[in-house]
Image 1 (cartoon, rainbow, N blue to C red):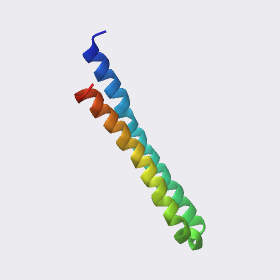
Image 2 (image 1 turned 90 degrees about the vertical axis):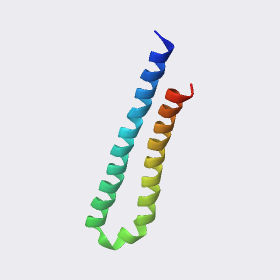
Image 3 (image 1 turned 45 degrees about the horizontal axis):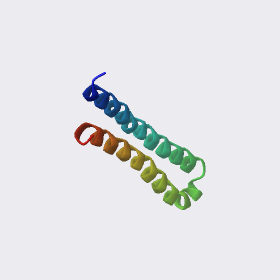
Amino acid sequence: MDMEAAKMIGAGLAAVGAGLAALGVGNVFASFLEGALRNPGAADSQQGRLFIGFAAAELLGLLAFLVAVILVFVA
């Protein structure tokens, strides 16, 4: 296998992480909304955890994108 082809396959596999991060963000917000509708009084205290979960899922997506860019342009 050519080295250039291996780089592109690796970048494509790393880019899959961006799509999975979108699923993670959707899951975080769906869980928060489900909990907030069941117990509206506790929704305010859980909002900080919502943003932490959102940031963690989005960070993983950005890291996957960064790995894909590094594989394409640097390696």
